[in-house]
Every structure is written in structure tokens, then in C-alpha cells.
Length: 155
Image 1: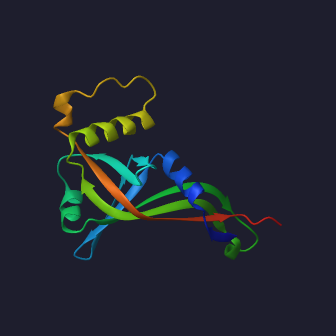
Image 2: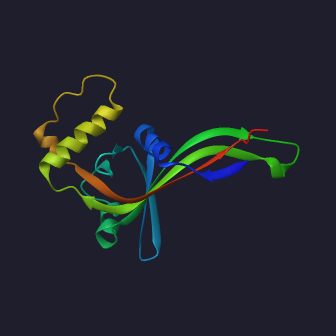
């Protein structure tokens, strides 16, 4: 098996198509990681996440906005004659950046609509105004993207 870095085009493709990502953060040497649905804004180099009004993540981000966000594409399990030849194929992307509360209404509505467009299977309709006051959008301003893959070598 060969583990190697992935190019930026494949990293962006994975970010655009992945269903779930994992937001990792830390405060006072206490790590915290949770899964989210998300939308990747390639043009502005940002990730948007729909979330609630309160919770541990907001407490942590307020104290330390540095985060990483990971997505992975699973592959095939590989076995062989020896346990040392066992492996698992994958592709993964890690985004490093700063997380912020989106406090601009237009940005909130736009990013929420794009997130809905990513996951919906039918017409979404308008977001009721009373619902907008009960949600938050978290934005990750991307500083760095890395990608790794572990794929079977060609013989």
C-alpha cells in the first residue's frame, strides 16, 4: 500500500461531494469532535455548517476559534497472507482554519440555502423567518487544506 498526498483538485472534489465532515476543536487541552453536514464554498475558501443556538462547540470556539475539519472517503479492505499486509484504502481531507459565527443575515440565508441545495431531493421552498432566528451558521475560514490517500499499488 502506498500513502501519499493528494493534489488540490482531488481535495476540493472530496470536499464538494462528501456528505459528512467532522469538526475538531480544543479548549484547555480538552479535545472535542462532532459530525456535521456542511457546504464547501470553493470560491471563498470557506466551509459552512448549520447548527443550533447553543452548545459546547460555541463555548469552545469562543475561547479558541482554531479548528480542523475532516472528511473521508472509505475504500476497500485489503487482506493478505500475513496480518502485516492488512490495510484499508481511503482518501481523506483535513481543513485547518478559524471558526466564526455568521452574524450577517444575508450570508446566513445564502449559506443555508446552498447547504439545503446540496442535500435536498426535491423543492426546498422558502426558509420561514421564524426559523432563521432559531439557528446559526458556523463558518470556517480555510487557512490550509491537506489530503492523503492510501490506495493499492499497481503491480
